[in-house]
Length: 57
Image (cartoon, rainbow, N blue to C red):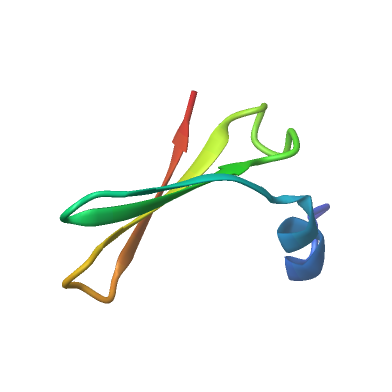
């Protein structure tokens, strides 16, 4: 099975923006075409430890 290492995955991400409001913080990353050119969005609610990760676009 072909794949990429954790280091390759991390090195391919580019932080595009950080959005903060009263409830959430969102980190938008460029996927460097790893997932068809989608953005990777990491969302975290201020009062929770868990994060949600989605592909957008």
